[in-house]
Amino acid sequence: MDITRRASAGTMQSSDLMVHVEPAERLDIQIESTVKKQFEHLIRDRIEAVLRQLAVTRALVKISDRGALDYAIEARVETALRRAAEA
Image (cartoon, rainbow, N blue to C red; front, side, top):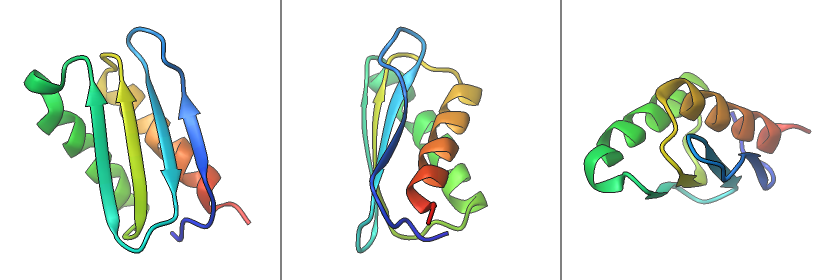
């Protein structure tokens, strides 16, 4: 999947996250989280799984997390990526 424009998904409410995606020359994942020290590696794993599933190899993915669960992370990332790849 090619990321062709900027897009976002999510909210900044508790137990949710905001995902911003934009075109880039390489894959770059930036994570800000209220639970970063404890769960950054798990958040990154969920993001990378969605990126692999959708075959995204070049994008800037910025995450602002407020304690979202795995299913919310996956849904928000996928939605932002699909919006950013629309023609």
